Image (cartoon, rainbow, N blue to C red):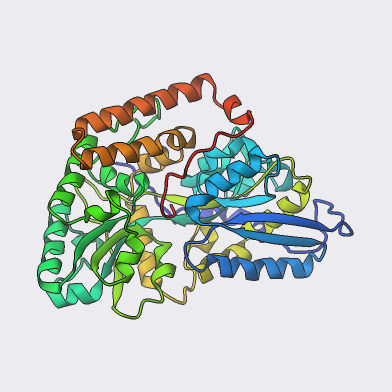
Length: 448
């Protein structure tokens, strides 16, 4: 099976390195009117310390662009989509926003292509797997900032107390059954109240689907695949982990926050993303670490990322594009990711000197290197994913509650996927151009 190699073929991009660094000069090729005072509203969410780092970057930028004021509007991740949709529907979009679901807003983004050296020169600086997230119909609709991966964060104090050692190398990766047995031991001998916390998002759940050899859609994205034997087996196993009290019902069937549960020291492990490293870096009441995800048929994580998107009809598109270029430049991108404890999406920032957790980031990177291409193909198909995530989450809940079988749940999700695929073919974009924007709640309780 083909794999995604996250830090590959750096020689291919050597010729672009001279163009990678953006010179933050008050005057540039855009031809900005530096006498014009403008304010850029920047809609923002944080998982950890990124907000603090971004404020420092904004301060640096404003020092050399004194005509520009950047107003950071901070919202909770789960509220961002709704907030942004309301601003767009009200005819007052922000200048730019940090987002994950680029497909939801692609037709409201202005094209960055005229502001960069060229599409190929710009995109060649970033990980190839994420290109469809930010390039739509030959339009650069956003700039990548960081890339994400799922992994296992574990309570080392509880594992040590139970006498359980986690895999130390990729060759020692547990199977899911071995992992479940280890978690049982940590509960029995280590005193953990909960075994494994899994973020309440379809994206985190889908990690299990890929490890079982399944996928949400076929490789070419033309049809659903989640209701085949492997997709159903993954949900059966997810239900079993709940019934065996390995995964607490209080997260997917209740209201408990897995982050708070892990921080309390009550849980043995948390299946989440690399952004949690900064969130957990201040934990002092126990030791914790990162280990490899277990496997079923194969190893797999789920690649994702976050992007900076500028919006149409703000009358400050030139200034916005200039700031986005600044954020995407090698030096600024390195500062943002290194100090925020995130993985950079730039190929030339693949080895940052992290102040904390450097070895942990290597494990996350290894997970991405052992992830099948289909995981990226599924989740970068935002036209479909943005329409089916809520249904997928809800049918998983119904299956966990015993209201439907795993097959019935996945058949229902497959039908929603089929409808979304057909809809995107018949009417790929014009519905999203209509106003007002249809408001929907966010599909995620934590970041990508």
